[in-house]
View 1 (spheres, one colour):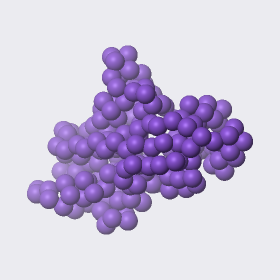
View 2 (cartoon, one colour; view 1 turned 90 degrees about the vertical axis):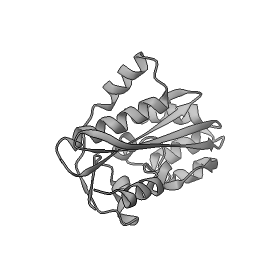
View 3 (cartoon, rainbow, N blue to C red; view 1 turned 180 degrees about the vertical axis):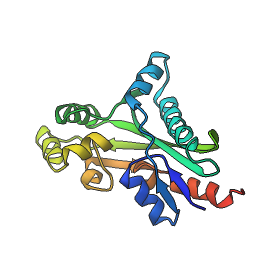
Length: 194
């Protein structure tokens, strides 16, 4: 069964392809910053924000593709129960890495499948990561190896690239950390009956 991925993330598309999930891409273009701000103003925690964004993306595209399963996804970083946003500049990326440096944080990946404009399934995966205590020089060297558009689109570290070397330990599924808890998605899609 072909599903629609409501995301322009090349990494998420690659995970689906690698695991034999036939998909087409239709980005939701949801204004994530606006949604996050509204939810934060209501006191939402990072997990609720991640779940809401995944659902919003999925439902929005589901209205355009009736009778298809539409997959929406969102990943956020939670440090001491506080949301860490994607950087808007290289300077902000450096500040975020300084915050995470030497600290344990959580990467929350939420996915939602919708059909005919309504959510029919969702799942949230929470991974624990602890960053090494790195020098300013090491942090700057790491950032210098990432293109600005990648940094702003995907956040301050990419596990699939050199980001793995930033961590003392990672407790969680690699695909989930990269943006899609594929095992749970496949299980749902494989068992889905039209």
